[in-house]
Amino acid sequence: VIITSTIKACGYTRGGREDKQKALKVLLECMAELKTKKYITPTPLTYRALLNAAKALVIDDSKRRPISATIFETCCRKGQLDNTVLESLQKVQPELYMKLPESIPSKWKQNVAEGRSRSR
Image 1 (cartoon, rainbow, N blue to C red):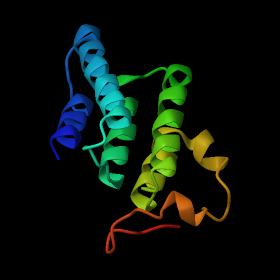
Image 2 (cartoon, one colour):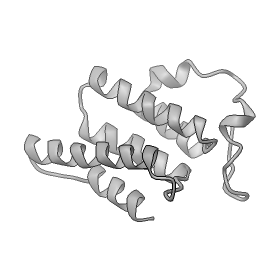
Image 3 (cartoon, rainbow, N blue to C red):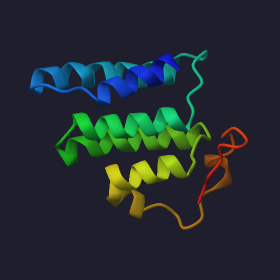
């Protein structure tokens, strides 16, 4: 919960370029923590918050695309994909969304908690 709240706070950062750069640094540190710490269990909400924060902090689409792709790939690898993440991807990186298969592989959504799964 704490890491997701931190990620959301990064996305809501206002101010100048320097403030957003600092928030982006924190966001990237959060992404690293999610990859390396076994005790942190991200949920679809975490990945949605990451995508939305990346959009808010990285205006240049060509710079944001690899960040968004990494977030999405990690989400799928962890089996945490649901419709809320897909909706965020569609808004944040529509060209990546358009490349998705028509039928989402079940392993991409296998770890979404019961009652939360809203997959396409």
